[in-house]
Length: 314
Image 1 (cartoon, rainbow, N blue to C red):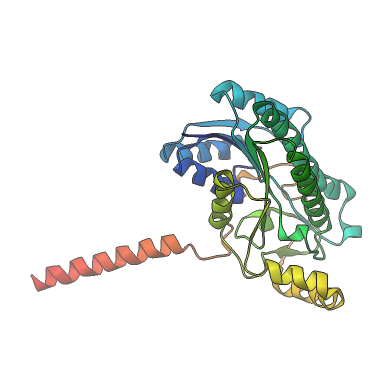
Image 2: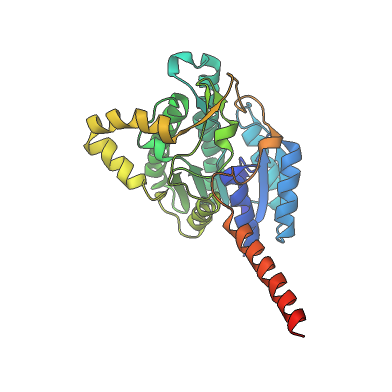
């Protein structure tokens, strides 16, 4: 039976990949994000996969917007079976050099908006005695990195919030809360981030694909789990941070400057912290090769070469 799934942050990166993944399974989708134009693109992608799709342009940080989204979803499809929240923004810069309003908005978007999503979704799930909430966290909810203080603070807060909600959910049978924590992911969030550091950020290797994280999100609806880590080095980084904190602190700064920042200069700017940039919205950020496209190209070249050889033999 198809499910009704709400996705907040559906126009880019992990959220957009999750929308495609749910669509491929025949679920009904309610997609929300700030950019109406990009939402229309994602709706077309998901409808092409055979899904029923409703799009709702909204900003998760605006008062009342999340509750209105839930009301719209229930009015359209009758119920909400699962809610995946992946909306997030990022800012690079030393803490004391990042404008206070930018830091505050990062925390508001990445933590307080997630709390509002949880509040609205869980009230409805509790009334129905059923429902799954998936929050997208980060390995940076377990460790820290310099020059990303707002994002780190929000993801640590989200980690604590999720654990508290999971403990409370033990009293509400049928309601599940899952936290998906990816490491470095090939999404546009790094280029789209606010920047007061002078160098454009990038995901440090090893980098995973947003499609892999999306599959973990979808799997949580089928098999709810308290926490899912997506990233080959997540466990190693958490071990170093916890067991060898002195060594970790010595190494993390140089490694961040080497692997977490590009050499491309950039003037100070607020990125998409306050407003979306539809031009930069996509599933991938271009940090990994698109293997599926490479395979298609290779198949096309091979087929063309085979046809040419066959004609010559004839």
